[in-house]
Length: 224
Length: 363
Image (cartoon, rainbow over the protein chains, first blue to last red):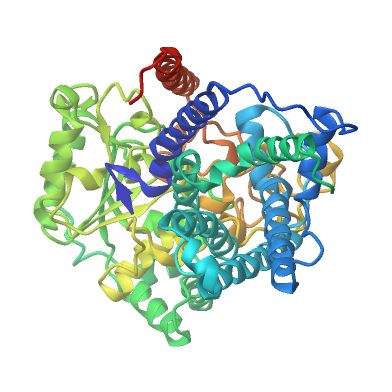
């Protein structure tokens, strides 16, 4: 398969991924600088007596959002638990697979020990199942369905595609290995391009927002 | 008087004269048929056809090449039968191997073309220079480009031997000063079989020629026109070190413990996963070894553009090289865009504050 006179694989790991990385860097910096540089209003209210210091409140906010508050019910538990599964699964795949480590080493020069392919494959299947479960819940839950926008579905799709194409490439299913590898890299390119402009940007913002929430709540004396 | 092959002894006669028994020929035909995954009866058909065939006229043209491909075939381990067959085809023109030289040599080519019009096999090794009408590689005052066009016009089929002829190879590597192209870009009206490799495996050359002699047609080819029998599987899929890849056990350098234990060479740049060839099964030097068995990763020499794939010692997955200038530019653009939107937000806020602080004015 050829694109612009080069093989699909050359296209994927040449112009496609390089352009995607540039868009990613541009978009992430743009959004981070414009968000963090926004003018802030001074909170003129007096904090409640005996509240923790701002850094402690920030940490507490981050910690509190790692789980589900008591009384939220089993479906919320499922959502949080399932979220943990695919986040950890994705981390295992991205950082534990030798080929991924080598890709990152090529970019940043850092290397670390890796896991056997069988473990990664298992992690990938679990992650895939977990992502599918997340989608099913999003589409069936009456409230969540109404809250969901195209942004959620696109973010889900660009996350799941690298997992699927990666599994296909490792097991040589459906096409020649080079073609599958090229599709896998192209799916990463898609992810990188979408990342800064969609909900995937939470990877950079999640702890900032949780810290901010934690500090606001603490100042107002919310008991945790 | 040009040799048309009609009055020559058959290949079987010639083999018998050299003391090669019919049994040996059958064994060899069985070997070739097995290599090419042909049905059991095909080996007998192949032996009969080879024994009864007149010597197939072959014209071998060498262009921008290093003669490694000819060496691969002629110096294959011990005098094998592919060597014999190579001797017993009617090699009517080969600059490396023919006795004639100068005008006589060129006349031999023209005479063979005339006598076997439409029937001879044209074998080419080396890429074709096309820049400035191909003047960067000439022979007997003619450019390779002109000789190829002239000879291919009369050939039954063309076999591009080696990666240079098949895909451009090293002469076509960046910056490709001679405008080197593969044979298939010049010869577009004839079947062109690519037997790539740097050099190709001798069995692949012999097998393809034997198949053509036996069945009068070319074997099944892959999407790069390579015989599927030899180029159907990747080196990686047939590699005896594959279990180490699956276990995540990799040599990190050529002299570490992993290398001594014979672990997978992926991290030191092996291109096996994207290289299709029979090295891992047929091996080299009479089946003794192949590069990975000798402790070196596959270079990917049978694939197009193998010379420009980002370095032989870079892992396959690390061959994506972030372009620092582009990334730096993108980072700068992102920072400027962010700063601009911050400045806009601050200006709007300042304007709003100023408007709000003016007494008695409401919107």
